[in-house]
Length: 333
Image 1 (cartoon, rainbow, N blue to C red):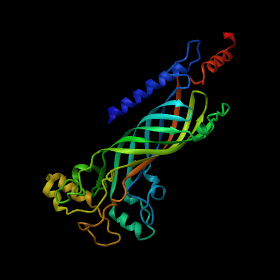
Image 2 (image 1 turned 90 degrees about the vertical axis):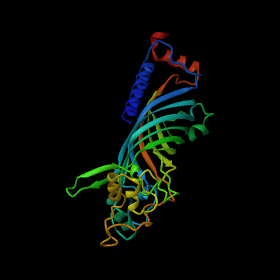
Image 3 (image 1 turned 90 degrees about the horizontal axis):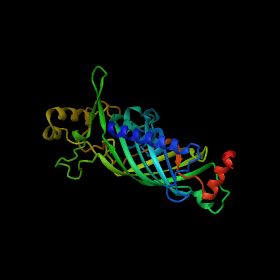
């Protein structure tokens, strides 16, 4: 994963260097790729990431999106992108990001009974995230005014939707008597019996998944070449195991049957960390007790601050480009 991240940033550096080279004022001809209206943009993005799954939340029954957002668990995601613009209102973006997401029941503030069951569950997770996707950017106002040559807004909204690849690998923690927390990878522990013959409907989940990125943003053009954006991007996944929590508790004796003695001992503890609030004296949940909600898959979202640099031609026609070049420096007349 570190090699992937290093390669990503190396690519960004090369693209940024090319951007600076092509954006310098000189008498040389501008880089021409395709026709005059074709544009390419490269850039970097960074921003907080938030997990939306089974763990954590607020008072009341668990909900999705903003209602159960736990700000103390905010993580950071960074990445790079390259976008091809066949015209001003449509872009085709390729992007890659790396960051973290996490969830924790212990952060729940208890106000009633509904959230007490989740806090009593007392589970947590964290995971590094690597993703890559291709998406369409659509600028609706520019589309509606595409026949108006004078419509050149500096600030414009846009929408994003596409398809992507996601790699994750959840970890859960155990805390010893001295307060030291140790993290363990959860998939090899089969905490909900994934892959066990006793649970034929619970297949081992893959750490590589398809997701659907979708969102909205605002883009501001500082100049013809440089722009900044603020973007909210949700990733809808097709798995409920990003946090390793989905269905019900299993018989802990099955860990001894299918895992090594070392892994079985860890799995017994980490699969059921009940903190008896609703049921005083409860040491373990009975097999079949609800552990997660399999009716909704996990998702996560980011609020990105993006910095973009356009390369190649930035004018609508050769005539406009030549006029701009002539008027920029009087000595060229």
